[in-house]
Image 1 (cartoon, one colour):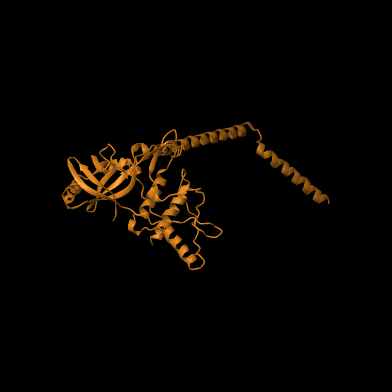
Image 2 (image 1 turned 90 degrees about the vertical axis):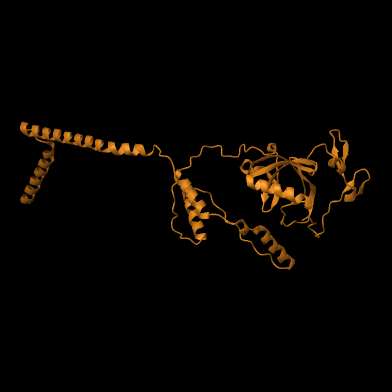
Length: 343
């Protein structure tokens, strides 16, 4: 692998000559700009404003534009002789536990290769010290015109360095979280936990860039004069009206994709503290018989009063209202009968 920077690791009074190598590579497909009408390449040419002519890359240098528009030339030699110790040195400043590093700060990754035989011993010493301490080294270094922060850790038998953003370069998540109060029920958490367990873990080696593969198929088909394959449109999820139903369906679909039973997912309740929601139910159950007893006592009292009134009415000889309609009906019946006999 080609080195992009040569220097040394400063570990106290120990100096380790190293070479900086890119630890990652991009497999993304790049495009060229073309003229739509005839397919001609669109190129950008570099012109000197004073001489009004195109210049080559060898004629191009760096310059800083001052507030008044004046250009101050800066050469590679100027950058190499910056009055800081990190100009050609990765200066280790501390050793901290890895969980102290916020993943938001992680940037580009590099491998640090030992430069020559004399570097083998101190390089191995630093690697083994990092292993035994279970810590990472925080360092400062200069690259591409500015000083950077780095984290050194062990990867296999090598030392890797992750460029870190400075703390003031990480933005606070203001205005990102929902600004409304939301209550998540325990049953919803249980279903979400069941979905996480069903999806399980994954071997990152099994993951690949499906978009790039599909794009390569399209390019190959057009190069051969064939019709590009139609890629299936992704399923569009509708509005989630019932969160519980969406979670249950997700668990069921995940089980089916893993070849498991499509029956309703087994939900394991999460450990939780006892809430006060059960106490009202118990107290309600205790009060219910008392309400029924009071109601039945009212009914018995009402029945006794009605019986007493009817008994009083019989004793006084007063005709009850229920007998009057009967008497009228009897009278009407007699009249009807007499009418039939006269006919």
